[in-house]
Length: 370
Ligand SMILES: *Cc1c(COP(=O)(O)O)cnc(C)c1O
Image (tube, rainbow, N blue to C red; front, side, top):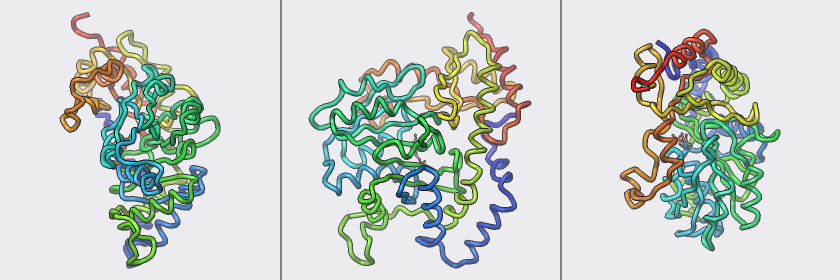
């Protein structure tokens, strides 16, 4: 049996150091808003190359608070529009609508499944205030092209980097490629906690200050509340876990790339399309996404051979009941991706032999009606 992601094995690979770190925080008697979070924020900002990092409770809050921060700073207001890829995890869209901003869905590039910069400009209106790019599957979006459009129309560029910790674009890391970025440390992400966690990274000290206050009930000075904030904290145990894991992130991402290279070289099946991989270090393979018109049959076939796969994602946001007001819209590229995408196992603890088993299984797949 080859698991999609063997989290137990991932966590075990950090032992015994990881448990020692957790024990240390448990024994310290200090569990929120302390030195651990501060130290992790510093380390993660340095890693991303930004001057600021604010730890928060999860990725959705990180995205939400970036937008909310701009609203409190008077740079956006309710009803303003945010251009965002139509093919993303629902959290990206929820962060926009949670702030009563309006998501403007943009069809992706069919090859990379990333935002197509040439489709952004036609969507710009007088109310457009930002482009939210998603480094989907772990690959950095085409940021130079996005920056050009954004500059022409004075738009903020916000990165949803929840799947791309450590990915590089032309020598710079994601999280440091726009005006502000959001990360998730959900356990299955490339840098994962033992529970929920998230962070905002930016070079905008004012935004960081506002986000930090918003995440702390709207307060930066005890019992003084300039904003109607929320409670969104990264806790001390998770911060210690993340700081312990961060130094190995680049090596772990490289292990993911090695598996991906093996797949790219080994998978040869006319019914299965491999992902488009641009810059080598530009992809950290949170997800190895193949495309197959007979996707469900391929998934069932692999399952029969003990290979666990997932679909990212079966139904696009505009077809969800939560966004029923968009259900009759059509985004053909997005819909095709959701119909055909299949995620093969990839992780830092996966072996080359396991990858070869996956390759042989994929190569031996033939749809029944062909
Ligand atoms: C995981 C993820 C999020 C949300 O992160 P949580 O920590 O689960 O809230 C947002 N956007 C994308 C693209 C994600 O993959």
